[in-house]
Length: 341
Image 1 (cartoon, rainbow, N blue to C red):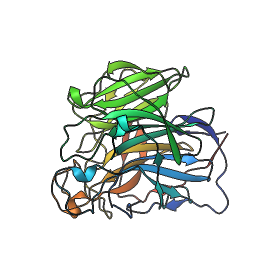
Image 2: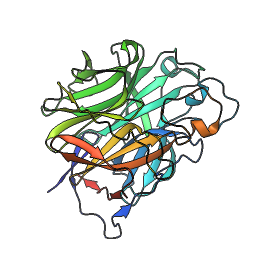
Image 3: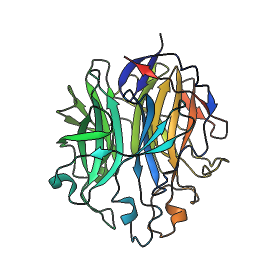
Image 4: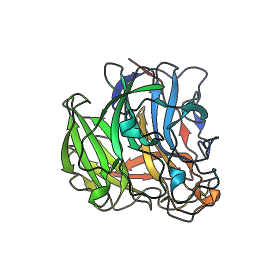
């Protein structure tokens, strides 16, 4: 029987429903119909509705009159849904997140969620929270832990104490011994990747900087595939690739992924902030682009909605001799298989 890794819940695969067939993924895969600013995707099977759900940061790309970087603040986490195994997606509203005022303020900003399902079926979200709407980047960011029975309504569990007051972009993965490890970006230390450990997803011990992952980057995503652990990071000029056999020491790959522009709609710039689904032995990388820009995906202060808008894309990954590659111009034939206990 095959195994499916989504976030960190290990589940047996069922056969694809008869009405679902392998299809070529749409390009762009998804654009948010409200703000046109979808970014930072993470994809997980929703057993309650029996659909794939995508959680994403939603920036206010099409809202006029916002100065500085206020447009990347002030929104909730969006949800998109796929009923055909990941080939097409539709907007399904926002995540209903309950936060105390002392963490989120009166106008909280929600960024870059990671969502996993624990072995007992409880869903966990690790979310970056900024306490307000700001025109610059010089404000605290906190990683919070939330839980949910249904992936829609989220209850606050705790705010995490990590290496600094400016931490973003958590990803959580279950280690072989059953404990959990979180990787995140510590903005106070030159945008470095740090990590923390937990036995129960509630109490976390910070372990410092991640060994082998160098340079400025953000948006780490860790997954297992082809006998190795892999980490992808957003370098703002493509995705950096690292490999490990112990989840502790990481070796970098020279070649970036998604650094060269693609030819498809909204795909003519580098890709950023990945989320991975491994299904039936295949790995699919969900990422976002700023299609109106030339090169960088770093948010800018410009007022043009053309520069601010962002789109979600997907590409299949391939592994050869311990290296990852992808071709964003090949049709991505995708069928994410439904999970069952």
